[in-house]
Image (cartoon, rainbow, N blue to C red; front, side, top):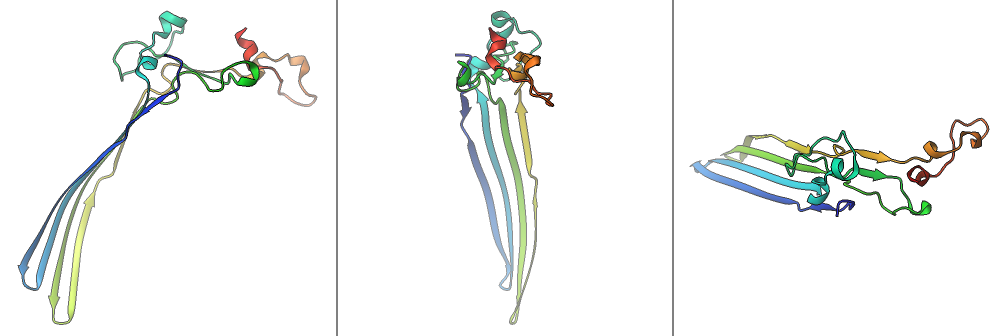
Length: 173
């Protein structure tokens, strides 16, 4: 159903680590470690929403073809501000998000401990890269909001105000 705002959320994460401890001498220890963390959060609209033929079915031109399903169609647009109080829907129609978030984090650590008499000397270093990737087609299918100002009668505006008061749904009738 193309008008749903349901989102697919299936987060996945995994971590890999490799550690090695080496006793160079009885009083000198070394530690080495490598790691990698991967986090994936595809927060996308339903496939039927993204592959909806908005040009053929609704006559809406100008949307950008989304790249998640490779159909060449623009998908169903987001339609906002049609509320229950005006006989519309409680929620907006169409996709609310269409993103694929990903974080990759490689890490490395090295440390040494040296003991001499009653003293302990420690040193070390760590390295890491934090990456964040956001592939999205949010808003590429169009985002329509029906505001009350656009359907109001300008003669009914409040004195001293530039704002008119109309109803959002009037624009659709």
